[in-house]
Length: 473
Image 1 (cartoon, one colour):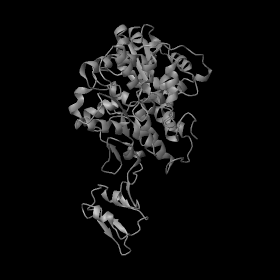
Image 2 (cartoon, helix red, strand yellow; image 1 turned 90 degrees about the vertical axis):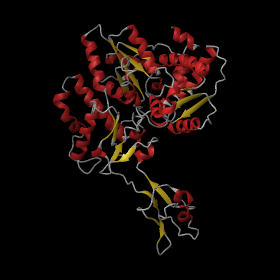
Image 3 (cartoon, helix red, strand yellow; image 1 turned 30 degrees about the vertical axis):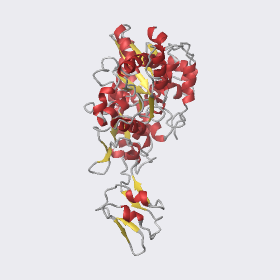
Image 4 (cartoon, one colour; image 1 turned 45 degrees about the vertical axis):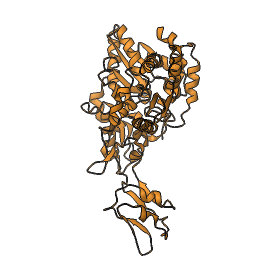
């Protein structure tokens, strides 16, 4: 049975591992009990998902390693648990039994390598020794009888970073991966997982408990309005303080800073790519390096507000909490590492709450510092565009604002390809790697049924009318 807070059994299993690792860490017994965690989660001898309970526990032990930070020498956040990969079929294009053996034989005519052959019953077959997987035959078939068998993870990856290894298990090409994490939720065997730095967060909190002069701040992303739907935001703030955080800051305040400064930058340069989504930034750098110069020089909202906090108190720890796995890679970058110490997902936050038996529903509400409507709607697609329009208005820019709002990496690709051919009409690209924007991130509790209305209602509750007012406060 899965917990109702999570979409799938896989997500719930990941949460159970994170919770147990955190629980042992709080009690200072992780080293002694780390090997017992799989048995706690699967105490019986009857397998529930695999061929045997021993393989299940072996896979859980690999999950425990990733929950403890994984291989720190590998900077990539997304990892494949090879023992969990079920080696899904990777046959490429195949002719199905819906082939009618038609006279037209358009599939044969379309094939550039003469890989289509016919048997005695006129049924088409593909010679794999000749096939180059171009898909021309599938497009030509009027019966849609030819399909392309791809692994779910490979289908999910918009940057083609999933490839088979020598044993035909899935492998991530880290030169292509942008750490968006979409493959994690699409793997039906839970064989792909993001590394967790939950232990680092616990270490900082425990340090603050032993040193009253050392403060730990929680930066919560505005996408939280759509993630913890069963409780109120004020209860989450109270819960974070019960966890040991000194204060809770809206990343939306950083979004206000970014919107204001990016509006100035766009007004000055005339063309700009947004810098808010780390997966989009990496996508541009890896696939369109000639256009890296157009990426905004501003830090992301997370980096912007963290920088302000560090300037006021350099002897503190700052932990970002949001929906994004790519943020974990962002905090490793030279321009960010001095400001943000750890990035956690909402999944990991839920595990932290439950590891200390904090029931959010029972807590009183604590007020959260105010950001503007514009800073808060950064959480969903189109929000940054709205904020930029307001920012340009507030700085009295005469620039005609022509935004390209890219919802998902496929739309980002289209926009960038247009730019390479000088066909892009816009002068500002809002690049969001996840469908729906940040609320569609891989680290959310609910992967499906995203409602941007939750973010909009949260944004409309702001009492600050202008971005300038927020920035100057």
